[in-house]
Length: 451
Image (cartoon, rainbow, N blue to C red; front, top):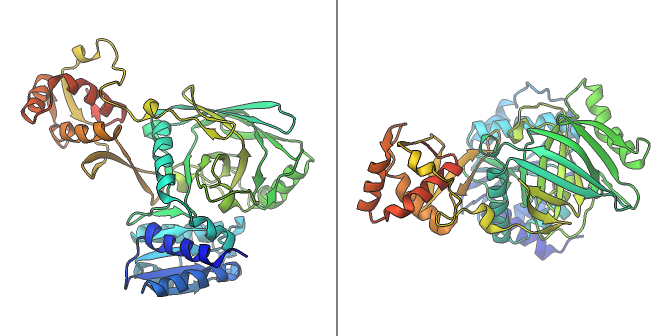
């Protein structure tokens, strides 16, 4: 049994930090038989904060009966619509995925905050008693690398020390990462407990050793599962008759095949765990994927994560002690973070501007990428999947503040401005002309401007 004080702190974090609920607001919890203990803890914390709480009990038989095209019953839709926030603690089994996805769609169409926690148990709830600020800092730096990068190289080892390499194409700004730092913004959804950054691959070639856990199974010594990917799909896994392969077939693949799903081998996700409060792998998918110093590959469904593939399953397979490169830059060595901040948080004073580029610039215009302001910094805002929005500072702290001032000088709605005019306007607002090229190049790296 988890420590009651820790559970209370975790529940308080979910209510106030993740969902941002205040006194007299309304929380709706979706629960089934396995999550009733969690509901008790959350409801007790909500009562102490004067947050009104209601619970909808959804038997698993009803979750199983949901078809992909089916809407939720009208009373359920109305309850979602009238709530300030929703917490989903339903089953994590593949046959219940369709109901979970319908609930997600209902929440984002109603612009309701939703915390998505399939398979939530007390031990999973406890992982929300963690350092949100440390997770956000790591997530911000890692997501910058995944936005500015185009290739991941994942190097893993099996129990005998043999290395395997999987090379993955990622989309940069065309297909940006998802950030699960635990803070859910208005009208969006996110997974709990906090602590993950993920990206949907464009392609994948090579092999990877799964040496941590599968959904429902903790891998022991000698139980590594070797996956071979070609063209972004699982082509082979071995040893074919090993316990890991048998478990994955019985619990995930067999269900997909019974449903006639040909998309289950899709390489749907590469995710990085960031939560320092999770100390051991357990075989609980919701928990293991967030453990710090691990990565996971997801098979099957990617559409709700920003991809294009629909599948009746999505399962995360956990890797311990990975080594990871982004565009050839080392970011993780055998599970230890080695991210060089200067590689990814761009500084207008030191960014590498191509020789002769500035001389060839005639005009500048905005690209149309969505932006916002955060305490004076310019931030990019992007969709990380259906109903999910993330944001990132444009460069390091000082650069993001200066870039905001230059960006405001660019015409809106696609209008262009001459190079000499933007330099002159920058001088009028107190910005030295010498720094304008570096700031415009930083904005270009974040796909905010066109030349």
